[in-house]
Image (tube, rainbow, N blue to C red):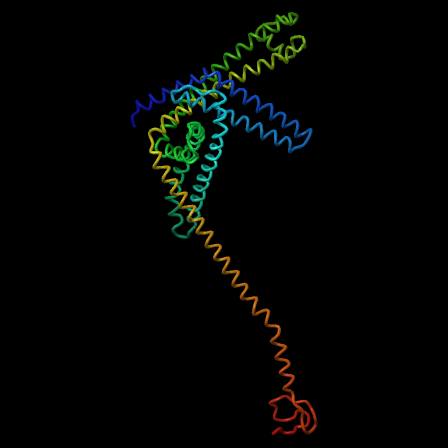
Length: 380
């Protein structure tokens, strides 16, 4: 591991600050968030006032607008991270409509892989209940499981979640994205962890810097507004800000206007760190995906999926064969049962026709009797 090279790669993340200069992407992200917020609020009102189903529909629309709008912004930032110029807003949004759903499929497929891993670990722990060898097996399995589970969780937090979206923004298919994420998790997780820590520091610094600017500006502007727009308030600085918050400015609509304008400014400001973080994730992904053997991982993943599909088809065929055999066995058991009621009737008729009369007293006797049960007459 070349430490100097890794620190150079981490230092290149400072380029993600350039994301704040992409005004088109910034406006698209703010517009998507505002539209999603308005639609979500409307969904709440309609769900209460009209019908819950209508509220659910508008809530779903709000999620779709925010999701595809945010992915369109990510596509524009990926263009810049690759050294190009971000595409127009309409082109990015149309691309998002055709590709953003892959991100959902990627997360679902990754969830299936993690669930299979948990099931396998649970099966191994179940084997530790075997008397005699169970404690010995648990002694070996427990530390190994701790390491594997810890690495898997760190890979999920620092590789899967941050880098899944950039893989889709670059244009990867669902299988390609999953393969690249697994390849990075196997061989680059420590390097990615270091770069993500640097990115968190950069994003936090940008957010704190912007928040300081906006808070200071809000104090000064609110104080001047309270003193100039409504001179009777007569306060500036923090005092004017507190009077404004208590309902100053004469109640002539200025408080609502200031709240709306200030809310827009704060949304624009706090959206910038999100863009810096997204651009940084794009750079982390691009710098690491170039150093892994993606094709080998993708081929191995496809082979495992094909093998699992064949096993599922084999189990399905075996189940169908067992069901067919069971059906035939049931049909064969019903046929003799349908004929069995006629047998006793036939036997009773034959028994009745075999009855005899004693020639001496006329009493009824059975065939095979040697003496009459009534008079004792001997049959010849």
